[in-house]
Each structure stands twice: as C-alpha cells, then as structure tokens.
Image 1 (cartoon, rainbow, N blue to C red):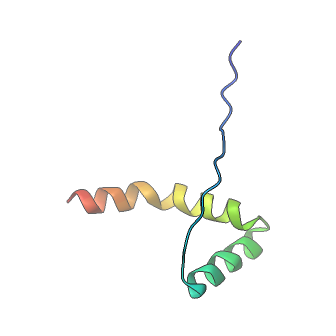
Image 2 (cartoon, rainbow, N blue to C red):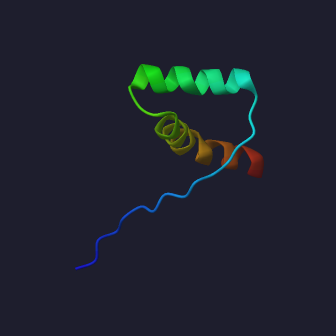
Length: 55
C-alpha cells in the first residue's frame, strides 16, 4: 500500500508589507495560518495566471 503524502518545503519570500497585510487578513478571515492562506491563494490562482502568461 502506497500513501501519497504532500511534502511541504519551506520557502522564503520578499514581499511588500501591504501584500503581507492582505495575506494576514486572509489568514484571519479563514481561521488558518499565514502559510495555509498563501497555499490556498496559490492553488486557486496559479493555473489562471500561467494560462494568461502563455497567451
């Protein structure tokens, strides 16, 4: 039996304070950590952004 487990990797980002405040607000509203908020945001938007850039 093989269990697929997502392995998380630490990432360091340099972002503007206003963006960080928005991430913190998203985390607070969703009741999650900052890391989970960023992950959710990326999961929801990454494919859309990639497709836009391919055009």
